[in-house]
Length: 133
Image (cartoon, rainbow, N blue to C red):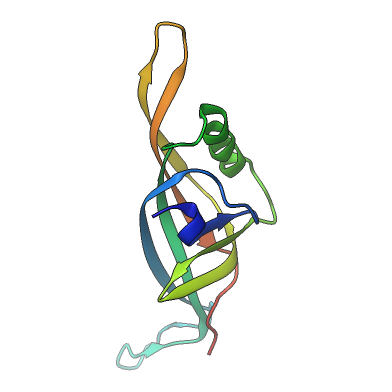
């Protein structure tokens, strides 16, 4: 599985390998939701469903420079998020996402000082609901 098949970030198909994708969803309510005093019944006021993704990448055939560029692109603080297109059901879903955290694991450092990073994991959180009531 490659990014050509399932992941586009910032309108670009990066030359890295996708090791795994974990899809999640959150159904969020407004501040009007909550338990009422009588019988503790739950009152819901749905905003919608937010599909997010955690993606684990590996360098594979990408150059060291390109792999570092992707990590730093994702780590850059943006107020307007990043446009992503990613696998969902039997097709893809496109949404603006913010990234609150990511991580990568050191593989090795050569004697000449060249640093090789192993896998990196990034969580994409949607900025707007993709499904609304």
